[in-house]
Image: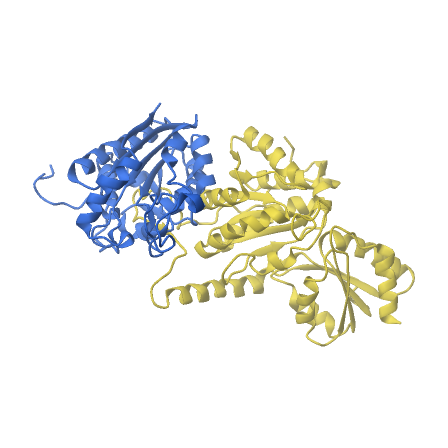
Length: 353
Length: 246
């Protein structure tokens, strides 16, 4: 048991679990895969203690469909996995998006493609931010960069999922999952009172309801997709967020999220120490992408450096936001590699030369 | 009191024309489900999981809460519902492609966990909705669009007896195979399905009834010949009766 307003030393994966418990997650379903195994194992313990539902499912596919089932009863529910397992969940995520079912999916990314390796990586950015499964849909994607945020964003993920009836991805990686850091367990701010007048719990004193994504009537699906698009527009307006520092006088902007943003934070401090006016833009939501903030900064800052633990995925969104106003450079380390602070510093120096 | 000599519509069945072909077994099985839910007075506490396949529109025909599920996944979805709402009655309605091919992992593990749910399994030896392809339950030598020269076990394996396979699992409580090809068998099928639902209501665990059902269009036969085909071909391959009653 952990107490509110206490600071605890905790692993990133464990912080996700405590965040889920705090947010009132009533059912967790998971399947073993490294580097997220601590979530499933710690969930088995904690959900048992809380008298809530835990199942080690037979597959990732089963896990996401169990989430589908619990979600449609109105219960808060989640699953977690790492990259190859998240690929398997995409079918279920697409169905949840089509059926407008809330739920939280944690991706503790590892190297890919294929079985890849078990290091942290950021190669699933496209998968997370472009829907991931079949069909025309989006999911909200949150990107923590500390163990504190692993905790906070898990709670936020449940709130957003319920608020918009949408699957929410906690897009993190093996480094953050395995890392120990102090976490302040804040008082529960989670909004659990979202009205759920669509759930299936037996048709007592009401008309029967159905949950479906199959819309075969003429124009029915088109209408449904436009309705979803309206929701996505609303989310884009309200929920895009990022953290910035030193933007006021910057001549070069580094854009990075999650683990790689920690390295860039160090790089910006080193650069500032040398009198080089660098700033950091750290998206905390990857979808919706904080394009307005980036676009505003691009009016003043003429050089951008995007740093990712991939061959370059978010860089495309940065380019779209910058829209030709500034030059966009890239430095990436794929396959579980970690960007080096000194390389980031060197790249920035080269750019502004 | 209901007049037994009059045709009536169970409260659990909506007044909607269904899409099933003439001679199809689904309509009969839908009605049996509806009658039993009325008789057990559980309509207001039932949540059904519809499959992908011919019964994909089941939510239009039943007058209680129904969700869709991805192809083969109803047992996982039902697990997610039942674990949160253990006092509700949760059942899946699945065809042979859904349950015995793409959803094999989900049904085996839901059964093995002894999930307290009921499974209505419709075996018509063919993929109906997609136009009559070979199913895992297709009989040897049976012609389908994807076994045009008849199912050859050397290349396509054998008719899968999923009920017998599930019966071997310690997690299952009650499994019976029935048929709906004539009145006598329909009456018997209703008895079996009612028992399956009662087992769930009593909290005794996983129950499943496999229904042999006609698919005249998928089999390219008349309704009359389909009835004969069940009697002469399907039942010898899939013997009727209680497979497990633990």
